[in-house]
Every structure is written in structure tokens, then in C-alpha cells.
Length: 171
Image (cartoon, rainbow, N blue to C red; front, top):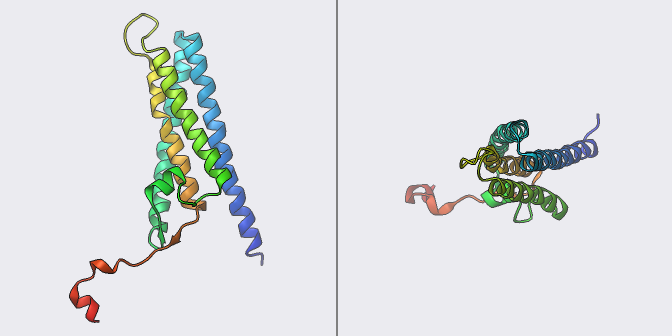
């Protein structure tokens, strides 16, 4: 019965898959957002808007999945919000942290750049469907949270003795 090494390889593969998926979805967002901003006709805006909404929806699901997994781990390990969503505090290898946070930063930059580049619609009225891109970084936060909660390294949870009542200390 294979144990240990096989489990490590499978966990490593799953961790790499999350990183690669994050990169692919970020590239998809950048391509469609730039296409929508450059071409800026109705069909291009639909492509950009639908892509942004789908990625936002995926981001919500992944965020909740990662949050649920983090809550389960927090029963036995010390997790910090910044560690889970920004991979700080040594919970992730440097290469993973850089790749995941770079994808998140690219999402934020793309969202703001395309939104402000085309801040009014083709008819000149204020507002553009490209503003939906602002929602996409939810995907980046969710992917970071999922990676950290399933593959991150955290310290063991230390009981908080300051919250014990005087009766609990005597037992």
C-alpha cells in the first residue's frame, strides 16, 4: 500500500495545478479585458464583461472553498488572514508566493487600467462594461486562499490561556 512519497507527489501536483490554473485564468482575463478595451465595440465589451463575471463567480466559489478549508485547519494550526490570502509569513515557498501574488497584482493592474482607460461607453455616456473587471481580483484572493489552506505550512495552534476563568486554572 503506497503511502508517504505518493501522497507528497499528489499533493505537490495539486499545488502546482492551482498555481497554473491561476496563471491561465489571469492570462484569459488580461487578453479579454485588453481586447474589450482596444476594440471597444458592443461584442468586444460583451466578451470582456462575460469573462469578468465568470471569473468573479469562479473566484467566489474558490474563495469560499479556501476559506472553509482554512477554518478547518485553524482548529489545529495558527493561520493568519494575511498568510492565507497573500501567502505571507513563510506559509508558501518563495516561488509559489511570487507566482500567485504576481497573478493577483496583474489582475488588479489590468482591472484598473482597462476601467480607467475606457471610463465612458462608446456612446459617450459615463460608465463602461469594463468596470466589471474590478471584480476579477476576487479570483486571485480565492486562488491564494485555496492554495494556502490546502498546501500552506503553518505553525501548531497554541492554546490561549489568557481566556481561562480562575475556576479553569485550578483544575
